[in-house]
Length: 170
Image (tube, rainbow, N blue to C red; front, side, top):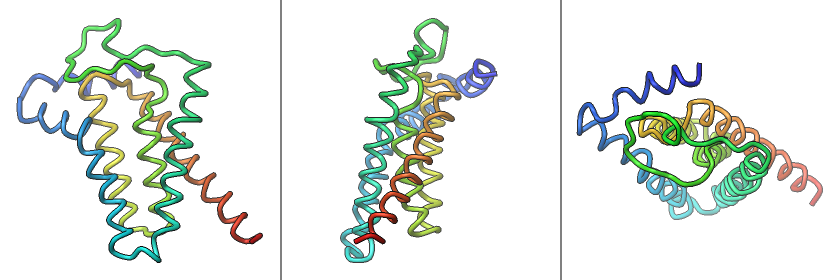
């Protein structure tokens, strides 16, 4: 199923240059816009969103650099382009499972959604587009993305829950 979904998405790479450019932009550069838009909250309403931005940083770092790395330590999975003929638009060197990008951006989206539903939807859509583009570009399996999204969402929920408990005790 994973290979089927991968080929279903990746088959469109290298077909139209405009689509390839959009996919590379989403997979490699859009993430900087998403992170910058998170910090815009601090400039617009810093008192209201300082807690949210702090929790997004903690949950994103926790999901990507702790949980994902622990999983990768136990389960090594090579990227699709290693042993398969894929339409490759970008390269990457680390292990594939779970997707660190998906974990990072879904963790951010989860925290933002808990604080502001409308803007949280934008962050979830952004996380989805970044993740889908990484499959399109040939560097992730769909299951990598799904696992990364689950790690990110649960990390965001866990960090938020821990924060709420700590805040109530202070």
